[in-house]
Image (spheres, helix red, strand yellow):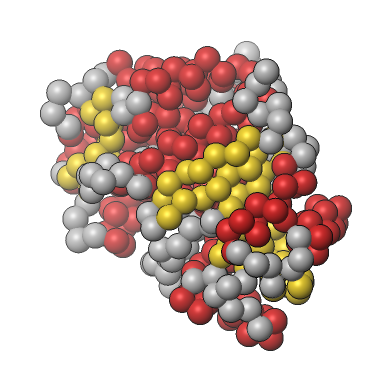
Length: 378
């Protein structure tokens, strides 16, 4: 029997506590009881649903909370990135006040990664910390904001650094309600799986490689198992006692963030895959005794996961400049999480000339992909 044939219950460690994961077919049926185990005696719950979320899922969640004894107050979170604006967070704080939510109560967030990130940010600040539960509506929301929620942004600011230090106490991922498809959110989840496996170790990478073809073929069981393993790996990385290990959670992300403004239509998943490729090659020119074989192992994995190389034209000077900008937002040095071996991703200082050289090589390779695609038999 597969690990997810029934509802799997796991506790994943994160800084400051544990996230109780409930994943499998029909997982929403255990939401109410699982939340009560986190909060104690049920009282109030703010049900924060992303605008446009499936009405049937909303109703299932509401019934679960009501049956468990919670007094439910609904709130609609803005769809997409708008959920993470400071104004949207102010609206959520106002709703928490109107609902009389205290530290003994709960916030139950239903939606994508943006909505869940905003809700856990606000829940972490309200009354010194309110229990937050996630009900993701796509695969990216099931793996990304649990370990590293997206930042809240300030209007007109290019450096969005409002990031909370709290995590959800409960994640309920119902495989009967999560779309396993080729959507941008699913591709982003696959890229996070690859990033986490590369940073976690040989076993995790081998297991993901074995399941890659099934995941790309949209096999629900294989995808669900990979989501669970990704959560475990990201939890261990973020909660590591070794300070040097924690930045590996961002493996590939700085380059992906730099590319967002240069290749805006590619989708976050494809950009994170490119961030992984770029970072692995950059490591060969920066770290001591790099494992060059990991480049080929990672390339093969990404291709099998349905994340092939991009075909695009980008100015290498702009790319190198954007990567520097992203790094300098949170540090006074240009440092990137780079792999010296599978399971060993660490921050490394990158000289300007080396960064420029690799940006030139990456841009040239992607431009060749454009030329190949334009050929009659391309």
